[in-house]
Length: 173
Ligand SMILES: [Zn+2]
Picture 1: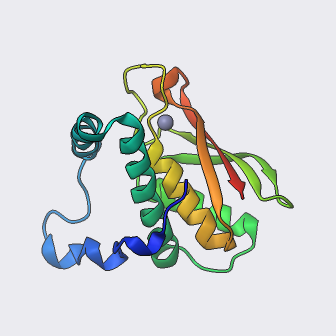
Picture 2 (picture 1 turned 90 degrees about the vertical axis):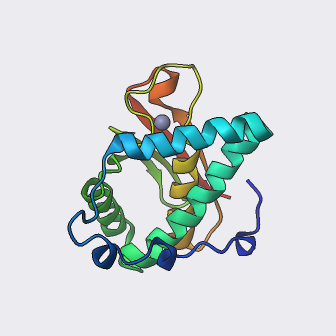
């Protein structure tokens, strides 16, 4: 997935001051609202530019989010085991999913990650295709920011291709 991150302006501040803006409602919404946004937007992008280009856009957006997420929400320069533990906890705290590292080659920086109860796809109708392009990019953005090396992330299993978890292969290029 080749793209120039500098073409895109997204930064953490774009999210705004939620405490200020939502004193009563706060941070919480529900998964339906999140998916309503994602799948309505996806249907428009699919129709306007085709599924592959739409998936590519979700990947890029996820990448920008992952990178900003790492720099703004995670403690920097941790050893791998503590980095993973911190990431697992954050993903639970934010209601994104339950992360497990299934396989790790720490020399080559190749990982297999499993996410249970994934925010984007768990419970989706089975279509035979993986849909977590945004998550692929999100993981790539986080791992790239953490390691300083470019990463390629591909979803192998997804609720929507009949699996009950999402499984991602994350490889340093
Ligand atoms: Zn998935």
